Length: 166
Image 1 (tube, rainbow, N blue to C red):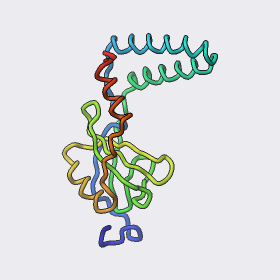
Image 2 (image 1 turned 135 degrees about the horizontal axis):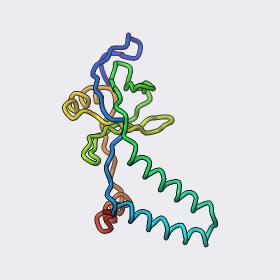
Image 3 (image 1 turned 120 degrees about the horizontal axis):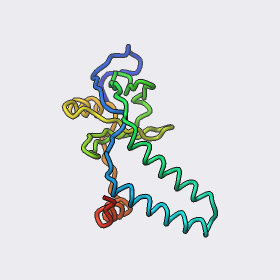
Image 4 (image 1 turned 30 degrees about the vertical axis):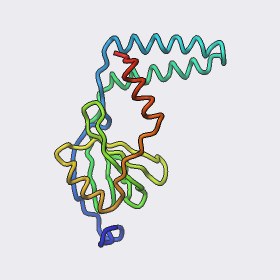
């Protein structure tokens, strides 16, 4: 833990950056055709097993994938202050954070933070040039801990390698 007590002092911004609100990847036509075929097959199977509700859930997920890929993410301002992580909508206090780590997804660098309360987990895109500064500031206040890779993670990665959707 840090030597200073930051929670009772005046808020000071330690580092700021701008980034998209979420990672985005442009999918090919092959991806969409593969996903639509799999969704159709799963819908037919689930319709005969359980009825219309699972089919509606599959269609909603299909629409969400399409809508997120077609909607450009907004640029947001992020800051780490002496109190915690600030986004445009909310401040997440260091007291509510349990651990964090970095990872890469679709060519973007992400900082993932586990929280003690709702929403339990947040994902922030970071500026690659400021990663070391961000890590230094965050490790003074919360634990840097990458999650353990489970058998399910390995299975999903293996399936993604063996059954490419593109």
